[in-house]
Length: 362
DNA sequence: GGCGGAATTA
DNA sequence: TAATTCCGCC
Image 1 (cartoon, rainbow, N blue to C red):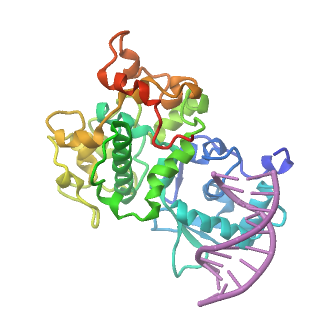
Image 2: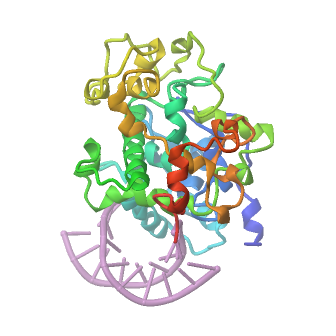
Image 3: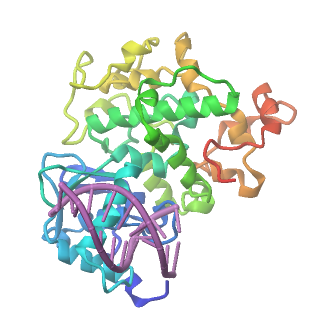
């Protein structure tokens, strides 16, 4: 760990990064956000390289393809990776083996037919880094990807948002199932279709939830910069949905009329009709679903939006601070507003549940 | 080049 | 756990 290599390489830069039109939030470039390990992970390193203009001759985003990148100089990338990891014997063969391990994890996949070309699975990365963010969604209709804080552009391509939404829905479902002990006969659309990998959403989540990475103890509490980083991507921050936010779309978020939907993107709003939605919510397929959460008669949504208060009120004591479960530590959470003796039934019922996140390590 | 199994490492 | 290393196969 203490080999000089670690400090070499890619300096961090503040702010958001717009890379070929795709902006990654700050956390994506922070080594600490690399889940599952204290050491930087390869996918993270790749992002770092992609972020840096000086490395564009060795690796760069593929224009026109969200999340797709090309390793222009495999040997050089391998060398850089080897240097970072203090593995002078690193080569592309080995590096690519590591990349291939990401296939199963659904972090990455290969673009067939294109040499040295891979593609990130954004939603997986997001879920991995923010497994909890949508837990609060029901009470915070603004917790939407498409609802960037003021002055912040939407960061994710629409297609990605749609995919992400699916992931979120699945996560909701998984959590609800776990915490209610109910066996839903059917999960959300994608849940059943997945083979062993379905894994992914649930189990992968668990694999990264263990060590608290989201709370204040995990970089998001302070300093402000970190918070703003979080705000960059996570919609789970104070209500900041500007009335005109639909006009904030970045270059990859061309305005859509309310009737438009993405080709190939399931119209979740039709699957799960809700009440009237905020105009902005119509921006992306599926968003109305979340936008409508807790907003009225869209009760069919409640199943998916089930919010176990216990999760927030009674985090694993071992995990320490409650904040560990609350990436927004520092902001008044609804949990805190609960007066003593005012515990709701949900949390009471969960008291003996030994709050086990769907994915908590044993 | 790309894939994935297997053993190993930190 | 996330690689690293090696290797046979296509």
